[in-house]
Length: 93
Image 1 (cartoon, helix red, strand yellow):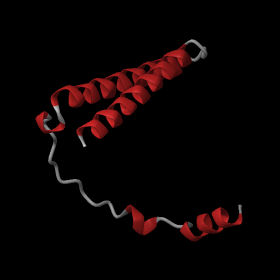
Image 2: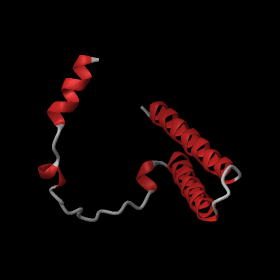
Image 3: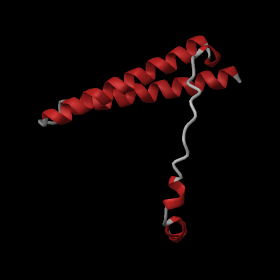
Image 4: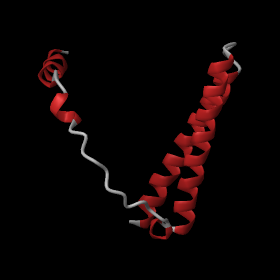
């Protein structure tokens, strides 16, 4: 089980690093200064995610300080529509 978790964390770390590289590359492809700022912020977030995952891999998930906050139910699912349509489109293709 520990090997499976380590492998999953390696995959997740790789994806975070790949996403960070994508955002960094995007900064040089736009002339919009606001887009550059956004892409830089997104790259920094991906770096934080990768560092968190590396910490979990090195120290184990039980060593993390998890937030145990109660998340309020916003009842968003009561307002969603179109589920049947998506199923029909999927079955037709």
